[in-house]
Image (cartoon, rainbow, N blue to C red; front, side, top):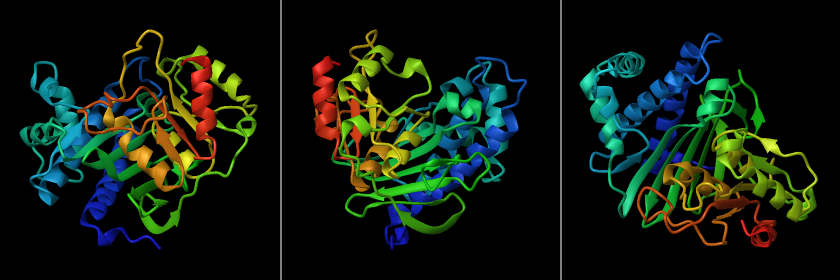
Length: 330
């Protein structure tokens, strides 16, 4: 049975992500209402800042000299017009860090401005903006990168049970993987870990493809061509965020792609969008590469600058997936 407490880093990451997921879930339930106007991102903005501040604070206490590379910066909170958001962020943080003050909050957020080096943590505080606002799938994602490879990854998925089953008032899931130690899942509140194992699907025609709910997150035409090239017949599994990695690792999906948009052919993935989930899939027995079949290289800064797009699979289907990508010239 997996025991994260034997590793100081794993114990920290598990505790931090579980607590941050609970915090973001509380903010979501407090601020996302039916009266929210279309396009109003304020709840997820508050949650993004609050989670990054909390994990920045906890990381500074646990590992004072370590670098964090995060999505957010506090500059907008310090500018005119940012006062109300900062007040809200600080108010929510005080529920778990009573001594938090506004200037502390900004300092903790800005820990995420660190420069990636030989060893650093990378954080996506709330992955899946639209899922968060719809009350569907979203995740907190934290990973430790050493020498360009992910060594530890944790996902907090409050609306998944056992890492794959959608349940919006359930116990949620925290998934964790350490290099060479497998991938595991338990509820957000705690309990026993269960091992994660990818599916045994070998036939592309039977593959369940995980796709984003938002059409703007992928090249829809190319995705349709790719599914056709694979001959996949199953209905796609639509889901926001790195929760797709969780479902793949748990064996309830078989393939996941990040294709390049025709309007952004030079786009490169942000490291915090892929680090935690990719390791969880690999440690569950799957495989993750770029669209050309190259391993992901996390040593190039804040993006996967050496990689083009992404394909994640149960391993059995990976070569067929890369071949189909080449066939449609995606």
